[in-house]
Length: 226
Image 1 (cartoon, rainbow, N blue to C red):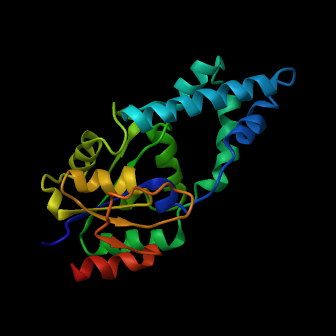
Image 2 (cartoon, rainbow, N blue to C red; image 1 turned 30 degrees about the vertical axis):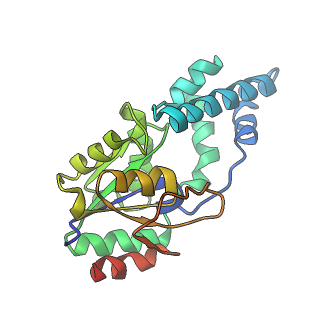
């Protein structure tokens, strides 16, 4: 069956995988804004973030970065958010191979979607894609921060299909780096799933991808073979 839509995970898939020390990141973010107690503030933010990601993992419930800050007792001032985004920026750049693949799929008339487990609002992601020159290539996107569920919940994948005006999962391919969230989740709703593995993501023995690629540049030839 032909592939009419390809839906991508964001972090670790459309962006190269980066290992990030969350506790240290929050320390750097908090230090200029809370000089007297930045270590306590950073620790509270890190704990809140870990707890909400654990809720996503175990119950597939979504959360937002503003929920993290509220739980940590930190006001999301413009200055603090600007520092946060500045520290995260090096980890947000779209893989050059990913940019090429998005353009190739767009030229072939294949719909392009994004489905990301994220605490960030849509506007932050769209600014990243706009900066990298690919926002106009994306036909639809779903960010877990704006729905009730995270991957691998079926509702997250259904929302992603709806975002690119697709109703038949057999005509959709999902591309991601997480065996549980991405591969298992996509296959559970009837999509084909392509794994772009990295060593830091936990395995899931029951998730057997339809294909494994080492680089996004391998995706278009794979899809054309289907």
